[in-house]
Amino acid sequence: MSLEAEVDALWERAEAGLTAAEAGDEERATLDAFLDALEAGEVRAAEKGVGAGADSGGWTANEWVKRGVLLNFSLRETRKREYGGVAYHDVLPLSGTAELGERGTRNTPDGTVIRRGAYVGSDAILMSPSFVNAGAYVGDGTLVDSCNTVGSCAQVGENVKLGANTLVGGVLEPVEDAPVVIERGVSLGAGCRVTSGFVVGRDSVVGENTLLSPRVPVYDLVERRVIYGHLPPERRAFTRYVDSSIGEHDLFEGGAYKPAVVATDVEERTLDATAREEALR
Image (cartoon, rainbow, N blue to C red):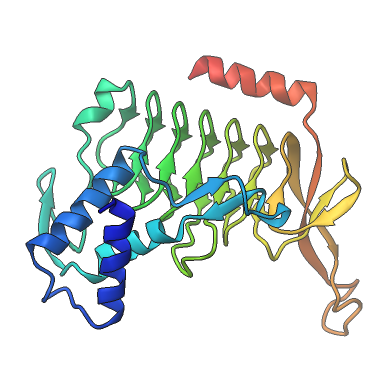
């Protein structure tokens, strides 16, 4: 039986009432094999390809993978654990980091946390404090800077820069929804927030403190359209404020405004700056 079939069968049993207290060695073996496959990059919570619409940037969820992550929470009991001399309580252990050095990846001490079931590629950099949650995928050569979170099932491509104090949300539930995706070559400025399954297209440069969410409109000046849920490839994006539907309400002197994202072509000088930063890394 394939790993996917084993996870699906276990999901049906859990839906029928199987509890963590009732799960035995066979069930835990399936859960552990699934986490191993995630950490090896053999399975991913989302893929780009057939069946995905333009609104999702071409990405679709692997529902069985997201179910596998959920099962590792619901069919395990919280217990006391220890890592690096620190005691904590969780259903999942933290991921081992012994292999990171072998693949050229750096992580700094006292606050770089990789949860079991997360994939971190080669030649990546994780600065403390940072947190990579179960089911997340961090591609080769990517920088996860200080005070960053990569949420459960988030997909971050190769050679991405996540500036300091950046939040990359996950989207674990519902299982049919694609998670947040940051495609290869993207640079997110400090303080950015990417949430609710938003897809950032490859080689884009996003200004600091920008909120990317399906609820925030993207004014794409390249294609001259307003879009939601994704930023097209090779854009320079930043926050601006536009008139709110509330308009000139008595409570808001001078009118009310709401945040929006403006997207333009990536300028040559922007590319030069990111190239210099890459050389420093």
